[in-house]
Image 1: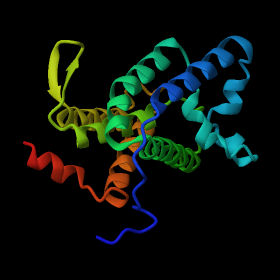
Image 2: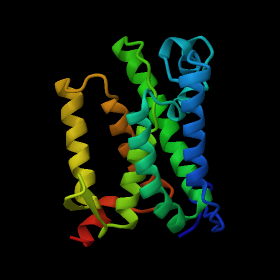
Image 3: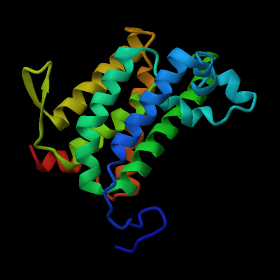
Length: 210
């Protein structure tokens, strides 16, 4: 198949960028929590701020977290799934995927907030992390994830469960303070990335591994 600029492969390298991403998130959390609290508003994605020139927020929001449990869950997921995925596809592809999915989820959320007339504060790496979970399930479809440390569920089935939980929560108003739409965007843009850049259909992969 002829390669284009959209799916040209990178030379494989592995530089453990997962730890650098975690380090940046932790550093930003410490700075915005204890040194510069107002930084949360300048780095999170706030539609009114973006409209007034802070367009970088659709990117920086994914490095800001609300509290310890928020960053703990996201960074633990990034450590477990991101490291294995980075080793599999290489650092450059991994970073392009993570940052692209996170940024596109931020842009989508910004547009959604504008349409809904909401000036919400969006922060956290969850959109990008949900994308990581999806790609992990594509490359490791037989991997079992122990939910609550007890219940083993294969990665593809867990993605399906997450999708319906987020979909239900978004339209039912459950946990309204959680950015369910951004989580869904992370899954959707991760899926599109697989189709367009990697030429992989996740659903076809999962069907073959049933």
